[in-house]
Image (cartoon, rainbow, N blue to C red; front, side):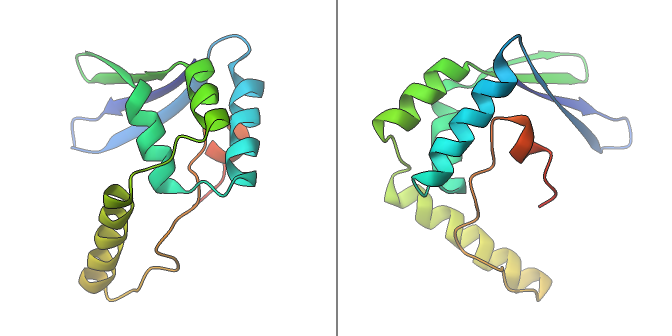
Length: 123
């Protein structure tokens, strides 16, 4: 499992931590390698993640758990984001560029990652 843990702070901010259950780190990195080699992007990551996300909350702590074997099966079988969602991601990035005055570097950001190699990278 890949665990995305959000600690909601009293000031309104959020501290994000990532964790993996036993064997999850190498499996997450393997998924990321396959996805990147197949040209998957952020829209694909959002779609695959949404298909398997299990969310629980306790107080200010929110945990999103992703069963990596299911994620791997999706990537191996070629599950991709629907075009409408991909275009929605592009619209959000274009709008953010308009608001900030900084056009996005790309309208198809990279796969976000399920393993420690990609999740540790600064965006």
